[in-house]
Image 1 (cartoon, helix red, strand yellow):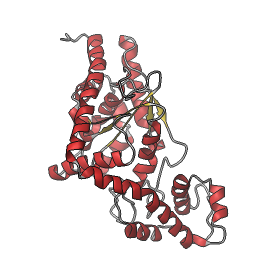
Image 2 (tube, rainbow, N blue to C red):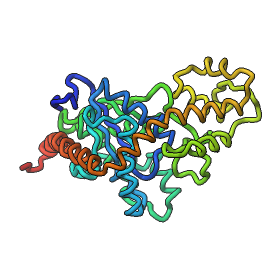
Image 3 (tube, rainbow, N blue to C red):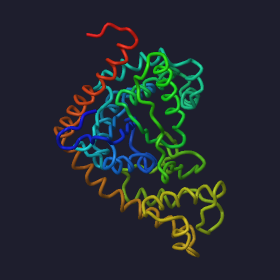
Image 4 (spheres, helix red, strand yellow):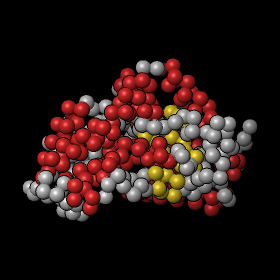
Length: 341
């Protein structure tokens, strides 16, 4: 990847690739687990970000809502700090090399590897009327997303490490057959905020698909809504604000959120709220979330009202992404034996 004028890409620095599906509103879990780190990573890495809309259609989408969600998420991610002058940020379906390399990698991915993927098992149970081939083979597309750009590091939560391991296996298998072709990536897991749990079922990851509206905080929630949701957050029967691994999962989750936003250790939080009880702490967490989300919400309103600017940015990024990824795709095709124009 060549350095570009304006320092869009940085020479001699590792490349990071990350993507998120535009399947609905962004949650606090998405933000603290991944997106908050994206803006910080831009300063020290070559960053390539994508809206993974090809992955989204493994589950049936309402076309009108799908388009709306995609453009709104693009605007929201800019509001969260992605800088298109520093990072590449495109819509996946606008770059055809992803689909083309995915088919090639399908042929170098074993059936047994795909059948063991946790997400396939989970979604197959949830969407029993639509267990499609794309849902089964999507990890090959995910591998293509990563390998096309020579990514060194993939920011993921603990629950996503399986996808990176499979990508590594596919890359190593291909390289073993044809010689060095793909960079073998590594998982990059943030030390804090990597896994935010449901406010109503703190043993499960926060998800926008939860049926209980109080389980999830969305980045565009109003201040009143955020306060109400935190006040209703499930905790244990005690009153002491103390982090206890594997025991008080509800209060642990709230402390994790507060720690990430306020940059405080659990010990510092325990001292701050000593003798104050859960009610006071829940309010403090809510206020911290509101204060940190307010600038994002204000920027989002600005971006979403300027559709021309958004279109310009995602189109420019797609052109650059295609230029970069075509080189990787061509190299892979030549190694296999395709006649390449």
